[in-house]
Length: 230
Image 1 (cartoon, rainbow, N blue to C red):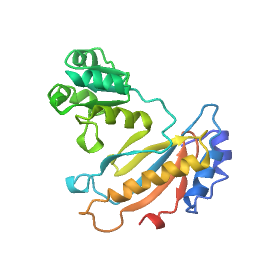
Image 2: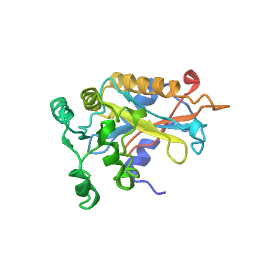
Image 3: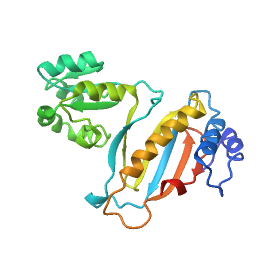
Image 4: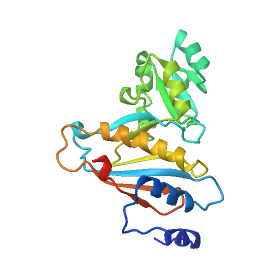
């Protein structure tokens, strides 16, 4: 894969043979974010899990203390009093059955997170083929299937992110923007890692965290020492 001049210059600042302490890795990821836009700082966690086994799946959510730096649009499927509750909490879109054709037929996907009350999951289930592949299906483990829509919406708006294994058993999550201070990024990174460590499946034998890498959207990967998280 060919990289541009900027990337190659940034990559020279990172020693690929070194596993950096979190604070140093964050400083490097910030320093090598040289794009003209405010890059996202992402964490990529390679696990020893085998996601094909249900008991080794990892899925959950954590509220980052300093948010993600991104404005998140929330869609809530609700009815009755829960509609007003969701709107009062700051949901961007609230509705029920009438939203199904809009999403299914018109391809409307102008939202980042979907929350649903349990009694609306029958409706949401009809959208599984559209929302599922995009990782937008509400899930009780992530706190997005709940009667407490106020808490769900407020947590998401405050910087709640969802983490889950991809097909390669890697977790990819944002922990902020390059414009954040190193302290803000470190607080977010530590909150995420605490949650991931607690989410270790009890069925897993052997090493849990194989590698942790930090990078900005356009920048090189910086390896983080996993010793203190094992």
